[in-house]
Length: 513
Image 1: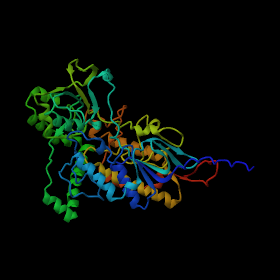
Image 2: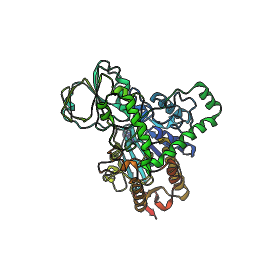
Image 3: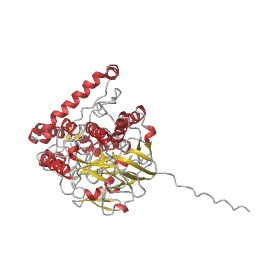
Image 4: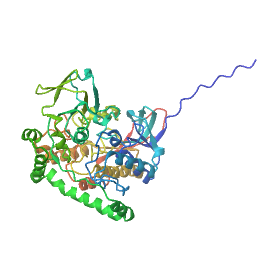
């Protein structure tokens, strides 16, 4: 009798390998996808933890959500949009723009939705990244981290919050199923999101209690509808849209000097803000609570025509000492006052100086990026970090802006990314990492420049600063200066890593000085 043939054991599917894995599908991730395709690199995936593109413009759908940068400047230079409806466009229009970019530039096949990166670990022997996500595993020659700093909401650890019987949510996780009409609502925070939310919910709620730790400077918002004639002109004569964008760009570049070198020049702007408070708030006591004691520009300047009238409304109370404790449905302020509410909305920002992605990325020596950054985030040219080969950031450390469009910075970093990948191919190397000297020198120079800025000298504490008081978020210069700094990769600032011949047992990497 012939022996029964053995059943073949099922083989595990091979882990797919790509040249580039992009994390996130907001402006940074989609921009990276477009630039990779234009450079002839089609072997890439965009790993998105949610079910659609959009990044922060998908997550933030709160009432009144809009951009505080003019629409024609807050868009890709390679994807102008002649159909912007307003000079400052709202969240639905910006999200629709990103969906259109995704389709027009053929990015859908590269997208992997519901694929949150839970770990990315550099494999020294094979000189590539091993990536674990909620949708499977990949390996990649390079990673582009475009997760963004405005991705993970930050909610303060308040005593008693877990026992609050009402509704609680963060501004970036708005619960549209919860009806605020007639409710007693607490708004925690008075930053950029709160300044848009408050005027939109104040007429609806029964009582609005605003907990303010530090007041913000607010300027008038010069917003208007863009006429059909303007749209027609920008569509038929694209050069007119380019001129409009150029004028907006130039105006903001002219403002840079006041922020980074001559903060005293902001006095005139501060007087405009003071007149704006006076026009919107008649009560001198409330006006005093809403007037900052620091120089304008030190914290983010807000734009609104409706914020002050909403705070001055009869059903609004401004508590100027912040929230310290929750006792059942009673919120206790730092001054001891108590306030009964039905719902709490947190407008308390994001994990910016401690980006959660840092705890999930492990470099050549096995250390996490979060551990590497425990004394403060830093990178070379905001883009690469020593010990983490072929990890490229879009909106990395010290690339944020206080007065202009982040899309300008994103495109500069994409230039740097594409040049880096092209350089690796040209010199026959597999990976690159900055030298310790180059990264240290870049950041010493950057922080020296930071010391003169209004963000350091204006007399405030802000979310730009980490726990040690170091500003690891903003760029202390012009967008033109950053574009020059990231135009090309300087090989003198890098160590190049060459892949060894494949063998069963990985060999040590060869480092070329």
